[in-house]
Length: 162
Image (cartoon, rainbow, N blue to C red; front, side):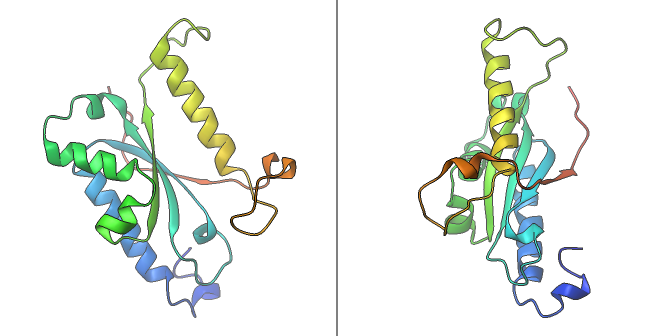
């Protein structure tokens, strides 16, 4: 829909961004288990020629902790550092990582460190993806920026397995 919809027939960037998005996923999957992606930004709007696509990859935390090879560790670092996928892999994808934890029984806040970190990170990203900056790009944030004004698209990639 975000590429072949008739509204985008005049786009000069969407097909390449779509290709870059698929290439980025393949690179990250070569290193860790990717469960889902939250997709947002101008690519998911009516803008005919967005500059990139914004993607939060939900990756299996255990697969990240179990990385042995330097190449796989480097891939995770590249995807978890803003701008590096663009600069080092030449892909028009802004990437972020959320490390999914298998938590059979959630404990109250403060009872388990990694649970607290995971829930805090998941809540942060959910809130962040719903915000729309009210001023021009690069302007200082204002209170109106905090209101939920948009959503994001969740794209399943693989089963959540233990």
